[in-house]
Every structure is written in C-alpha cells, then in structure tokens.
Length: 349
Image (cartoon, rainbow, N blue to C red; front, side, top):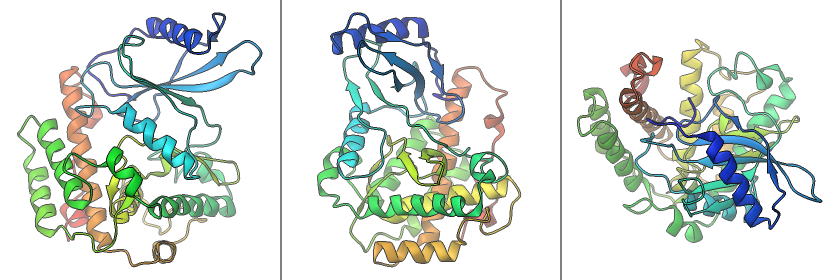
C-alpha cells in the first residue's frame, strides 16, 4: 500500500522519461535504467521505485526514485524541495542519510517533481512484526542493543543541532514549535475528514489543546517520523541511513522521542507483547529515558503527553488514509475498520 493514492501511473512511460532525464543530465545517450522494483512493504505517502542505473565507464548504481502520489494522496501537498534540502543539510551535519539526493522540480519530465537518491544496503525492520520475526528479531542481544543505541544516538545528534539554519525550510505555516505542530495536525484532520472529523478524534484534539504543555527548552530539528522501520541498519546494528524526512520540522525533542516510544508501544499492544523491552537486547524504558536525558543534557518535559499526542497523530493519519481508500473505491480495505485510537485508558491520562 505504498504511495496511497486515488490514481496510478503508467510506469512504462515513467521508465522511458527517467532514462531520457538521466541521458540529458549525465550527457550520456547510452545510459540505461533497469526495470523498476516498486516498494510496497512500507511508506504510505509517496511512490517509491528501486532501479539500477548503468552508465559508460562507471559501475552500476542502485538508486531510488521517489514521486508524489499520482492522484489524491495521504497529504494535501508534497514538498520535495524541502525533503531535498533537509537531507542535504543533515548529510553536511554528519548524520547518516541517503545521499547525495538529486531533486528535479520540472514536472515536464515525469509529470511531477521527483527525487533520486542512492539505495542504501542494509536491513529495515518491519513496522509491526520486527519484535516477533525478521532480521532484528533474529539477531543476538548485542546486535539488538547496538540497533537501539544507534537509533537513540541518531535522535540525540539530530536534536543537538543548532536549529537556526533549518527554520526557514522546516517551519510549519504557523512557524516552529509545539503550538504550530499541534495546529498543523488539527488542520490536517479537518482536511482529511472534509471538515467533519470523527467525534473520537475531535475530542482527542480538544484534550491536546487544553493540556498542551509548551516547551521550556530550546527547539530542536525534528525528524517527525522517528520509527525503527524508517532506519536502515548495518549487519552489526549501526545505522546506515535514516529515511523519510517529509514531515521534518522544528519543535521540542520530545515530539520525536514520544513518537518513537508510542509506535513501539502500539506495536507491542497489536502483537500482544507485554514485555519491557520487547526484544532481549533492547534496554528497558527507564534506562533508555535516562540515556536520552543524559545525551540531551536536560530533562524530558512531559514525555507522557507527547506519547499521547503521537497516538493522536497516528489516528489522524488513519483518517487521511481512509479518505483516499474511500475515494479510490477500496471500501473493504482493513484500514477502513482500523481503530483510530487505542482504548481510552491507553491514551488518556
């Protein structure tokens, strides 16, 4: 269900136009592009295609083509220039990115702006099943611990960057910070629900506005989609690259940390796993929180609220996905029956 959209593309036409783009950009009329491999196992907001580029005198290059949805998508707009800028800036800051990224703003080539970047070799855990099967589950405790420590280290490195240079490309329309982030997600809910949000979600946002804790600490650069499945890991557990930066913004570090913890918590609930941690090599929650505070050099402010807000955000994205499914005629898709929020006891204080 990658690239949720109401329309599909003619991939044969995209393939030929992409080859022509490379021929012009590389000044090599003999350049060739392999058949596409469409990514279907992760990602709901963009269309992602793997391919191999062959050029004269150079080794084959494994690359990724990223396009916005062909029709109505999960989000009302797609800012590929922002994604290009943030990945380029973070590469320059020493963070592990898929780099270099090439951005093409001219939609005459493929019908929309697009990104081309390297395909990073490694392992990406499944969003839901990583704790019961797959590469991360099958590793020994030492590798699992390295995975968790490297992921936490990435977040702390990101949150320790000076946010000033990132404000212009990353700020929401309402600016940066927690208030602007809350407002953006509420506006998105209204758009996704055509102005009539489900009562459960409307009540959740009333709670979020009434209890919003503010941020007594300086803002940070935020990934805003901090999930284990958005990272590529080397075999030894170190992070090879962090992916999916379309929601990157400026705000309190707790937004990222809360989202990471909330996604793990909801996955544990879905898989009926009560253990803390969910894998033997992971540090328990209290140890991880202590490490994050030490690395950031400050307390984590109202982390519980941010975990609850993350669950509200995830519910909001389900509303957006259901909108696309209805418009594309997929009324029987399982996400049309998905709960928008956990049971009230799970997400309300």
